[in-house]
Length: 247
Length: 199
Image 1: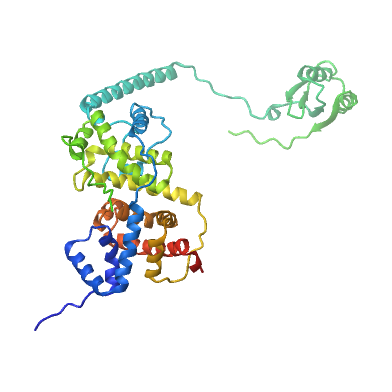
Image 2 (image 1 turned 180 degrees about the vertical axis):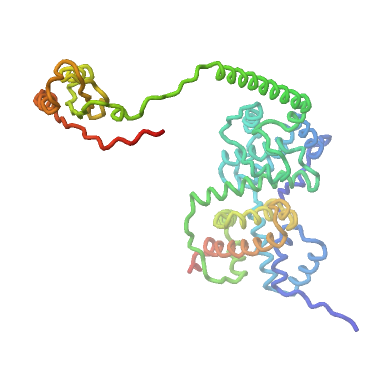
């Protein structure tokens, strides 16, 4: 029984025509195309169109041939270490050339990289690292010694001075023309002292105590203060019951 | 028909071949690199000038291409011809340039929807003294990938397999791009070369 191969149709031939026209088709395919176009008018015409296009593309143009000299001068300048060259090479191209390649500097040549004495560089790196560790250790020991020798302080004061007050308290709001020295004068005038203040709003807490003017009552002192210039508000402070002392 | 085949242009008699030059370039030999540069400048320039029509841009692409050659000469494994390897690098640079240009100068084209018999197109291409211009204009209306396949095949005379190697894609992809590229080229050519047929 003999097998006969069906002749290629026009669709198959059409795929081969551009490669026939540019002269790269293998001998067998070329024969197939030649045989087909000899009998097929449409494919013969299409092949002729392909050839016209190839001729047109390859036809000489009026372009003046560029000398490579100027281009080489620019590239040589980049090779000479102008790492800040405007036209950095896209690394993607380099990566495609060899996916396993290490990244390289923009203009350095790999051969130059290979001349690096890596064992010596590693020894140097380890030495630098050891020196840095020694310096840090010395600094740490000195710091610990300084800590041990330093006097130790403990804060015993109560955070809220009003809790430690024994005399009557008033809050006084001065206008901003009264500074701390003037506030102290006011306090002394009513036999008191500044217990806290000033706040950002120039509010003080006075504690009344014995001394000059101690004969006046708290109300009298409050009344007197309220009449003074620069005093905006005076209010006695009423403290709640004191917490019992802890054993 | 003169093919400016990238591979077939011979070096001057007695000159070292591309592979020998590339081996020396891999060792950092600047003089060998200069010779390789001069050797490929003309070939790449003709190809890139066709694609870009911009002397400065063509030179930029050449230098970017050759810089990659300088940096990666030692990575060349010899699986392909030196010219194919260098052209592959240039191809990717050119593709980027064409894509950038296409994005910045994208414009609509009135393309024929008429199916013109091949014989009519052949007549138009045979008569016109402007055939070169028509083809050049028509090629600018192709996508960068389609255009590059046609340029590599028609201008540089590369085979389907060589183009696949340069473009780093399967042979089937090259055939597909060639098919659609030719279709599009014919449509635009009908519009350009036979304006009376325009839809």
